[in-house]
Length: 317
Image (tube, rainbow, N blue to C red; front, side, top):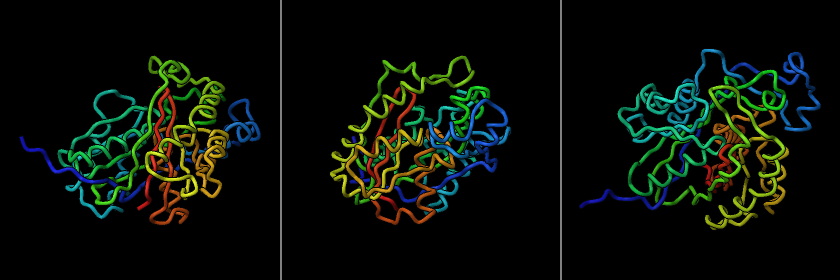
């Protein structure tokens, strides 16, 4: 039996992102529901968010973000042999978003599947891509987080509709002599899976206070474990880019890392909570603004429904 050659490492070679054109401010929501700008900002830190158009799909947004990442990588569609889309907001369970996205990008006959780990989805998908490349199952992988949460919102429920938004972020992962993606530290707390849920194809519900307590008290050891597995000390971090769930959660976890020099992603202020899209979207936008130069050491972390979580250390291309 002959096995394909494995790679000593994998790295991200490019990012891409997409946000819908429609900006919804806190003032827009105040005109529709019983809330205020002060209430929203004090609790979740959001000033505005992007909402997709009625005919804009999870796949549409994934194609744009994925296309940007592919173009920035310098690779051709024929070089991609695996496409993974992280999403929990597809309207249809079958078929996957990944297969259609691959075809629309001109990628012929790749491995293609979706990952549903909710807001930890991109980190889970990236870990799978890293392992696939290192095992020799793929050479170049397109990983996309794409979400249209607006179609699952009760727009009269101020505990959810002020938080969630739409968008997509993508990365191309390629084989590398020098590893650029650290080992993943991941897990789940299924005994608390009922804290965030969507049932019977209706609205998304969450127990905000329970989720807040879980994230702010139990997740920072996962971040420390990811750094330890990667052999990176907190003082070596350039940035911390966690899932953009809530600004108070982001800042609470950041304070416990012992990395005061690290730039903290605060994409949620203008992008809202975009679930599995939030980590790659924040990374891509930070790189675009020149905040993360090539070679930067970044700790990423996703967490959400399931309850699932995952953290990795990355090198910025």
